[in-house]
Image (cartoon, rainbow, N blue to C red; front, side, top):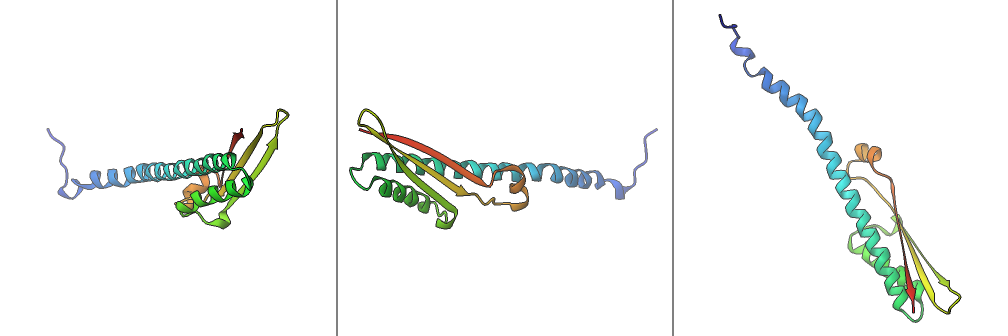
Amino acid sequence: MTAFKHKEEKGSVAVEAAFVLSFIFLPILLGIIEYGNYFSTSFKVAESARIGARVGAMSSENRVLKAESKAREILEQYAYAKDKTQIVATINDMEDGLSSINLNVTLDYTPIIPTLGILIVPNKIQREDTELNY
C-alpha cells in the first residue's frame, strides 16, 4: 500500500529546503565576498608600500617626501580616503655608508558588509617595506 499525500504538501519540502539552504549558503557567500575585498585591499596597501619605498630609495634628495607621496598617490588611484591612511617613511643610515628607507602604510579598513565584516576581518591593514639605497 502506498502512503497518501495531500496535493497541498507536495511543494512544501522544496520551499523548506530553499529557506534552510539560503540561511546556510548566504552567510558563506557574503563571507567569501568580504574576505576577497579584504585581501584585495591588503595587496593594494602592500603594493603602495613597496613602490613608495622603491621610489624613495632611488631618489637622491627629499627621499622621505617622495616615498610618502608616491604611496599616497597609489592608494588614491584605488579611491582610498586620505583620512583613513597613515604613511610614515624613515631613513636608516648604516655603518658602511649605505642607507635604507623604511615605509610603513596603515589603512583603516571598512568592510563592505559591516555586521559580518566586523566579525571576520581586522579593521586595520598595515604593511611595511624596506629598500636599500646604494
